[in-house]
Length: 450
Image 1 (cartoon, one colour):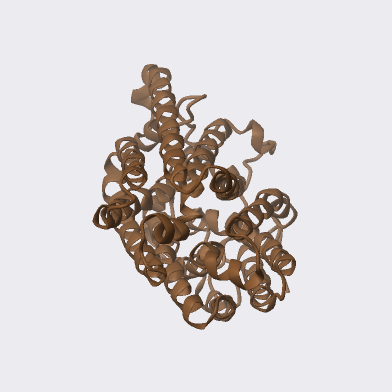
Image 2 (image 1 turned 90 degrees about the vertical axis):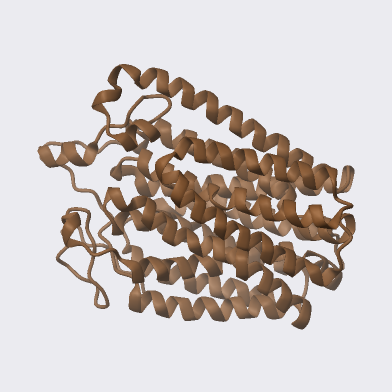
C-alpha cells in the first residue's frame, strides 16, 4: 500500500524503517548514504538487465516464437515507447506519494511483468508483458533519477550519481551477459523468471535499507509556485534531454542488434555473444570510472572525448567486421567511450535543474532515454531488413557525430552569453548553466537568504 506524503511532513519525520532525508539538513551533519545509494544501484542493475535482455537473446526468442529478429528487436522499441508515453503522466499523478513506498510498489509490478514474459505462449502476449514492464520501468526512473538529489547535498551530486550509475553499468558488465548465458543454457524464459525473482528480493532490500526522502520543496513566505516550464533552468533541462535523445537513438540503432552482428558479420560462434557483451560491459565500467575522474575536472572536454571515442570505435566495427581481433578491440573501446556518457549527462541535468524541478527533469530525462532506446531499435530494425547489418554502425557513427557537433556549438554559444557575468557564477554553474539563459540562479542560496 502506498503512503501519501503528509503536507506538513519534515526532515524530522521518519519512515518506520528509515530516517527521512531533507535538503535542509546541513551537509556536514549528513554522512554519505552509501547503503541507500548501493541499494538503489542494485535495483537499477536488475531493471536495466531486464530492459536489454532481448538484445542478447534475440535469435533464441525469434526461433522459439517463430518471428523475425527485427520483430524481437521491436520488443525493445515497444518497451521504450511505453516508457515515453507513460512516464511524465504517471510521475504527475503520483507526485504526492512517498518516494520510497512508491518505488516498492513499482518493483512489485515489474516483477509481475517479468513473470508474464517468462510464461508468454505467443509473441503478442510477450508484447503485453513488455508494455506492463514499460509502465513500471518509466515510473521507476522518474523516482530513481532524482532520488540521489534528495539524499545528498549539491556538492555531492556527482559522487552520488556515479554510485547509482554503477547499477546500470554493472547490468552491461554482468546482467546482460549472464542473462544471455542463462537464456542460451536454460532457455530465454528462465532468464526472465530469474529477473522476476531478483526484483522481489530487491524490493525487500529497498524496504530495509533505502532511506525515505522528503521530496517536496518548501516555498518562501509570499512565494508563488510556478509551473516547471517557467522555471529559469527549464531551457537547460530541455537541451540536455534533446542531447540524450539524439545520442541514445544513435547508440541503439546498432547496439540493439549487436548479437546478429557478432554472429553473422564478425563470424563469432553463438556462445561468444555473452563473452563479448561481458567485455563491452566491463569496458563500460572503466568508462564510468574515467567519467568520474575526468568529468569532475573537465566535464565538457570529457564528454566531447567520450562521444568522439564512440564515433571512432563503431566506424572501425563497420569497416573491419571480418577481422576478429580488431572487432574485439573496437568493442572494448566502444564500451569504455560510451560507459561514462549516461552518468555525465545525468549529472549535467541535476546541476542544471533547480531543486524545484529535479523530479520533472528526471521524468523528462527518462522519457528522452527511452525515446532514444525505442527510436534507435525501430530505426535499426528497418535498416536491418532493408540495408543489412553493416549499415547500422555507420548510422550510429553519423548520429553521434551530429550530437557532438551540436553540443560543441551550443556550449560555445553559452560561453559567449555567460562571459559578462562569468565572475559572479559558481564554478559548476558556469560549466553546466542553461545554454539559452546563461548561468543558472543559485536557488538554494537565494532561498536561504530569504
